[in-house]
Amino acid sequence: MCSPTVADDMALVSFSKSGLDQMLGICHSYEMKWRFEYNINKCAVVIAHGNNSVGERLFSMGRQQIKQVDKYIHLGITCDQYLSTGLLVQEACRKLRGSLLAICNSGVHPRKVNPLTSKTIYKSVVITKALYQCESWSNLTVKDIEKLERSHTFCLKYMQQLSQHTNNRYTLSVINMDSLETYIDYRKIQFLGQLCRLSPQYQAKSVFHHRLLRYINKDRQCLGFVPDIFRIVRKYNLQYV
Figure 1 (spheres, rainbow, N blue to C red):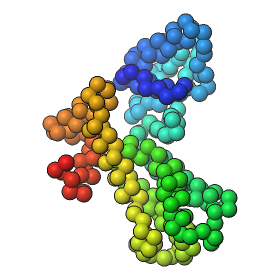
Figure 2: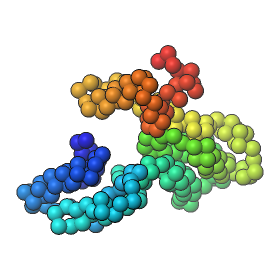
Figure 3: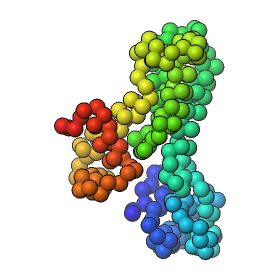
């Protein structure tokens, strides 16, 4: 695929070692021509579901060898070799608790602030930070959801100065907040709407159409955005859309 870049971050994706070697060769030729240098210490290769053959795992750019890692952070998103969401969920839980406590310790303490004001700060800052790129989280397990909801209710109880033994449903209803699973579903439906309204001239729209038609034609891939969307529209009775 063509390399999606943001600022100076680049991702190269290939189904084969030879394909990735060719793209690395192109990058090396380009840097030699225009006289700049890739920081090889910040480059890494993640092999998704790879075999254990060591000989096939040697990658280099010019004379410099690129290290192979089990996980890599690209644009703030942790990607591992199994394409799992466990690390992302763990990081989201850490950000939920850490961001809220950091805000409270900076002077905006729940004892001095109206709970509705704390709710506004929590939704606009904490949840937005913790659920960054949640549209790409696919195939979340029941344990993943439980971890997210546990951190979510901890924050809400702390904001309202309730005991941590308070019933979770009561904690959500008394401040009129939804579960984090609902927020994630909402963000995915929003992303679906953006893809549907996207102009056909963009490659992202072509990829979306291709994946959608494959799924409709019984090529039932079990992971990814499209299977999640079908699950969500059935969950909220939005099949007619």
